[in-house]
Image (cartoon, rainbow, N blue to C red; front, side):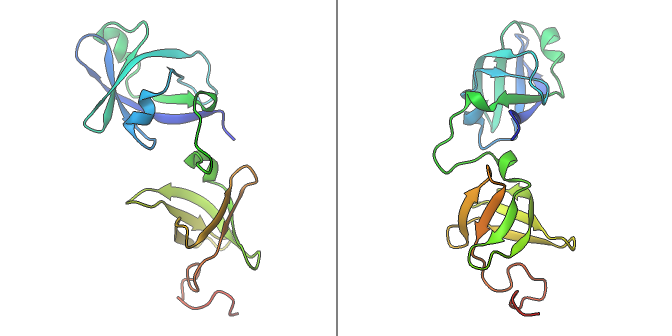
Length: 177
């Protein structure tokens, strides 16, 4: 699992006092507001302290320590910001999307492997997993309690109980050969 996870990208400056507008790639702008520091490399590197974060129209207005002017802020434009997973405590049963991508999707009853999760989208109230099988076919899987049995990213497995046809382009039963 990655130690440093993408939080978003600085897209523009805000005002003349060094604030930056961050487009968040995480659950919500409020999540960013709870981060004490940011990094600018996937490996971490030098930390940059966060002085303040304000949520504004779905974006984050971020004030970094030692950035007090628009000129100093411009250095960070179009840079990806990362956070250290050690700075965040997730509730039981919650995981970072980064940890779910790459997990094998396995049938809870038969052990059959349907493929690997290649993307997680949030179009509405529930997540949708894109699952790609060995043949290169992709399927959309709704991550709802009715179908999702167990998330175990630390083991690299997501256990599911799909309805017939969910992992088939024909719409028939997957067990038929």
